[in-house]
Length: 357
Ligand code: PBG
Image 1 (cartoon, protein in one colour):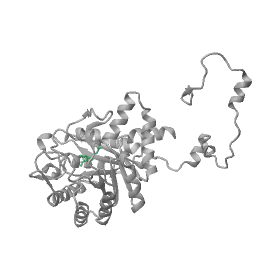
Image 2 (cartoon, rainbow, N blue to C red; image 1 turned 180 degrees about the horizontal axis):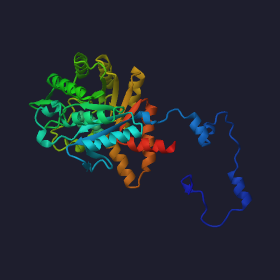
Image 3 (cartoon, rainbow, N blue to C red; image 1 turned 60 degrees about the vertical axis):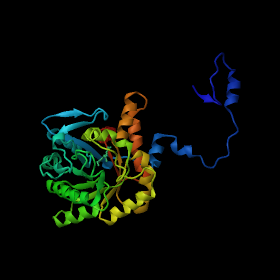
Image 4 (cartoon, protein in one colour; image 1 turned 90 degrees about the horizontal axis):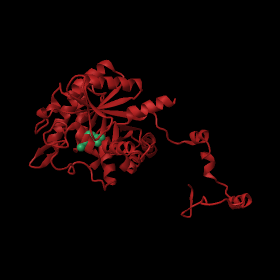
């Protein structure tokens, strides 16, 4: 029922005489030269004037890998997302190729027995991520593979770096991250994505990649990554939420800062980043916008696990139209200036866009 001045327009009883009704609907025409509604009056017009559109080329699909064969394990806080054994991850990579999703991102659920103080499993050339890269590259060579560089899926304390006396060490961590990046490049990773927020890691990784003969391996830096509550479900997925001691506020950014994001991005560009990322996504669209406007770099946003969980939870409760909220949220990234989005919705969106064609 329509509401006017806080009251329903429809009358409860009886009918007004037709003429009186007509009189009520008439008003002196406004003298408007500009009526923005003209461009919205039909689907064809809306399509014609649309400024930003989501396409499959904008999608990077994060996948969680685990040990085992022919195995899939649900992640309670991320409905419809599963941890996958390597063979199953390969199937999903094939699906990415079929759907024309340009790139996937791999995250490991490391066996807790293999986690230690220094995250040494990150440097094992046969670790889960490296095995997944090799397997996928062999079968599905035309899908790009992006890998996180950070120690959190491998450390017993759940931090991205080396921990000594309650302090995350910067330079010592960078030395390990460089080795992790090389191990992943060796396995065939296309894009190294340092997500650790240590100072100087992009430059160190770039130099090491070049020296080791990997000049074509790209770096997408998690340049402006905030210490966010929205990573919770991801930490469930990689198994670091229970182990994480304390928080990540001495290395990830303070949510109150924007200028600092520009300094972070500027440094990463200087150090050799090919692409930069802002993370989380939706609560930080202002940052996406200023980064894109300030540097004109290929700029990505990560619609993180908590954003995904919120939308899925509301949709599953019938509180939101999930499909529409998904497309709207992703279109917002494009409008803000992002060139692409890491999103757990990637296969769903790609399928929807394909079906609509
Ligand atoms: C690891 C990493 C995190 C995410 C991506 N890489 C979590 C964290 O920094 O604690 C979050 C992704 C998501 O929430 O979807 N450094």
